Image 1 (tube, rainbow, N blue to C red):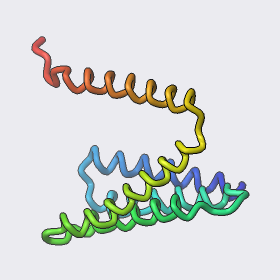
Image 2 (image 1 turned 45 degrees about the vertical axis):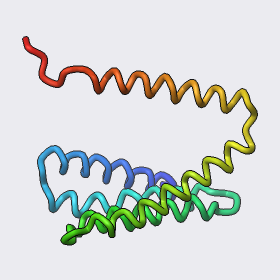
Image 3 (image 1 turned 90 degrees about the vertical axis):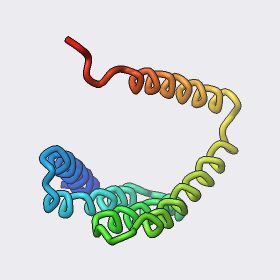
Image 4 (image 1 turned 180 degrees about the horizontal axis):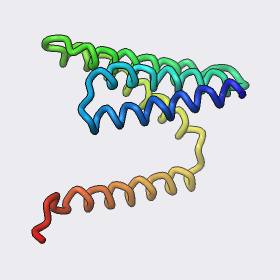
Length: 135
C-alpha cells in the first residue's frame, strides 16, 4: 500500500470516528480521533507533493492543529487562547487566496464569484427553513 493511501485511510477513519463521537457524545473517542485529522491531512500533503512545499499552507495546517488541540484541552477561559492560532491561520489563508487570485484571469475570478454567490444563496435559504415543521 502506498504512503498516500495510508494517510488518506487514516484521515477518513479519523473523520468517521470524530463524527460518531459527536453523534454519541463520546468525549474520550473525540479526544482520540480529532487530533489525528489535521496531521493526516498534513502527512498526505507532504507525501503527495512533488514540488517545493508551500510554507503558508503548511503553517495554516499547523496553526489549525494547535487551535484544535487547545479546544480539546478544555482550559478555563480559553477563548482568547483559541482565537490566537485561528486568527493567524485565517490571516495566512487570506493572504494565500489573494496570492492565488493575482495569478487567475478575470474569467476564473468571475466563475469563482458566481459559484460562491450561488452557494451562499442556497445556504441562506436552507438556514431559513424551519427546523421542526408542524406535521
